[in-house]
Structure formats: C-alpha cells, structure tokens
Image 1 (cartoon, rainbow, N blue to C red):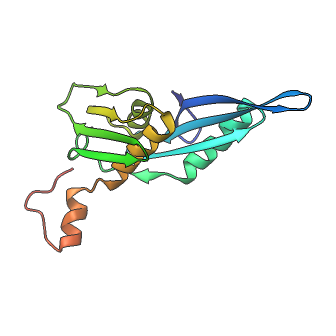
Image 2 (cartoon, rainbow, N blue to C red):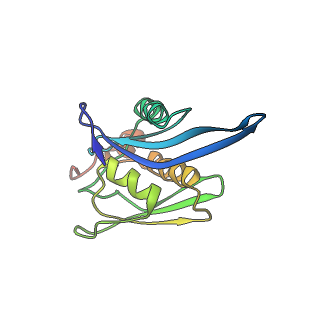
Length: 163
C-alpha cells in the first residue's frame, strides 16, 4: 500500500507479463491492475498495459483515478449485505461488527482497504481471476445506497439521522 502526494492510496492487485512470439524470439509486455482510493469512501480501479512495468503502473493508476466511485460507509463498514457480479465472478460483501477487520482475499482486500472499509466479511465465488473478482467487488460497492439517498429517492424523511 502506497500513499501518493494527493493523499490517495494506491495498491497493485495484479501484475502480468505477457509474451508474444515473433520471428526473432519473444516480445514481452506488461499489464498492471491497480486500485486507488482515498480511504474515505472513494475507490477506483484501472488496467494499464505497456512495454515496461513503471509505464503500465502509471497508466493503470491514471485510469483508476478517472474511474472512481463513491461508497456509502456506515461506521467503517457497509450499510448492508450485497452481492456483486461480473462475468463468472461473484463477490459476497457483508457488514461486520467493529473490530472484525477485513476478512477478504487478494483483489477484494485491496478494494476494501483503498475505500476505507475497516470491518467487512467477504467471499469470492465462482472464479479467482483477479480482473473479474475486482470488477465484481466494485460492481457490488457501486450498487450500495445510503439511507439518506434512498429517503431522497422515495421522498421520505428519516426519523433519526444516520452517519
């Protein structure tokens, strides 16, 4: 986990070396999957491809910053349980009580840490491909709605304001 000058947390989820066989031998290129977040509910991901690793990382980080979404948090956890889907990947996300920590693996953990979620229970179902797991996680988080947002849509007022 690395913090940059803008206060954003950058995490590399997956780095892949791709070989293309050509007449003179093999040509190598790299693809990088990066998650960026501010630790306060904003998170994004990006995929960068280039001939060198640093350039692939830079491209991925740039795309991640452009594709940020807002995640409604409730006392450091999620407001309710939800399932995110993408391709063959399904990710179950459940709120957890304070002190539980982030019970997640690989790509899901990176997204949760970058978003600022402190307590959550997760399970990746169907695939362990980091690309699909990451996109399923972000899909689930993007579908979350805060109680204020739902009240606004329904035209109702909440009795007790929630954080």
